[in-house]
Amino acid sequence: MYYGYYGYYFDPTYFLILIAIAISGIASMKMKSTFLKYTRVSSRLGLTGAETAKRILESQGIYDVQVVHVAGELTDHYDPRTRTVNLSDPVYASTSIAAVGVAAHECGHAVQDAVGYVPLQVRGAMVPVVNIGSSLSWPMILIGVFLSQGRLISLGIVLFSFSVIFQLVTLPVEFNASHRALRLLESTGILIRDEVNDTRKVLTAAALTYVAATIGSLLQLLRLLILFGGRRRDD
Image 1: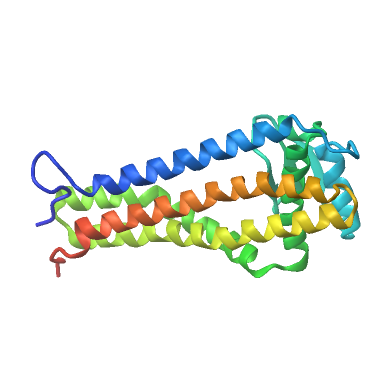
Image 2: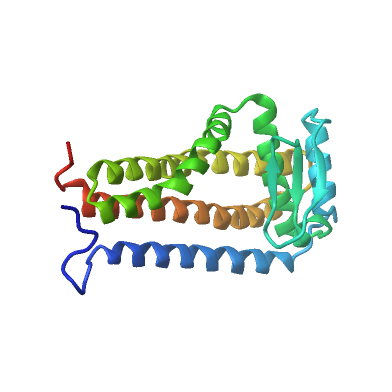
């Protein structure tokens, strides 16, 4: 038999979930506070996020990627399918250090795509599998627990692990994009050295959210393995 709990009233593995929530909350607060701080600091050159993105792309000979405005806050992303750098409300038309940094980071992904950066390609190839896994993993685990079917639970854990692997692959992609962004901001003269250091703080805070998400996924996987990994599997 499989049991999704320890005893009737207390499951000590919930501490893993609480740790994950705490880490995610701290990273999110750090990101928001750092971004807000540097949205109040204008860059000396005065380029907007959109102008920054266009200048960086042109400096790298990338002319088939469009810079577009999207609604929302911190919804910025690069979409390799549509070849667009999508910049959010606080970034697209802002001249702040934070906006310039975020725009440059997304251009870093466009540069990765242009040069065939392998981790980005691996992450892109994983998306369909991860989408399926994230949709089916928990239903399969719960059905397996309800029916006492170990194989279903094991398959659900395997599907969930795809999301964990995706998070791990995402880390070098994001760190590399930020490294490219900082180098390009300085080499193109968009920011001077002290401004680059301030932008590094913004991008480092953003990177911490990806680290927190990865830790959260690992802790969740660890919890599943503790609950079910050592149990007897059905033949």
